[in-house]
Figure 1 (cartoon, rainbow, N blue to C red):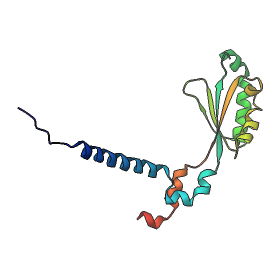
Figure 2 (spheres, rainbow, N blue to C red):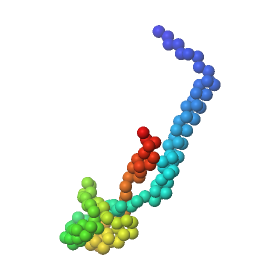
Figure 3 (cartoon, rainbow, N blue to C red):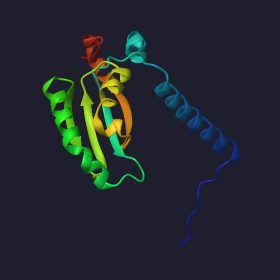
Figure 4 (cartoon, rainbow, N blue to C red):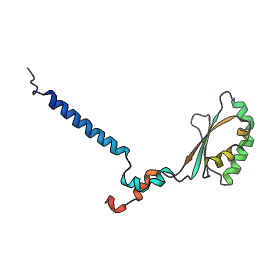
Length: 151
């Protein structure tokens, strides 16, 4: 059995490839340019509302469990006081067992640093801290723009 392929001309094939590539690139470009809804809310897109700061604490390299546990009674007491005072909104153990994650009820990273640096583990320089400002999920704003257009 012999399969006969239709005759293809190199220029026709090249033209089709160029058209497909052009359409693909146009689609990719349109995805990277702001939509009308995004353009209308552009100021908000660049300055999101910050409703808290996530602080990831990780034991520093070389710090032993014994060093951390010696400070834990004071650390727990002070973090509970921060929680009861409304400064720490949420707290979690890290799944890898190397520290904790706090959600601090502040509006900027500097305020979170001021709170965290005053805790016993930080004072003894036993933990690394990573600070991430958090807020409402920005794409949800798109649901609120031009509701009549979505129908």
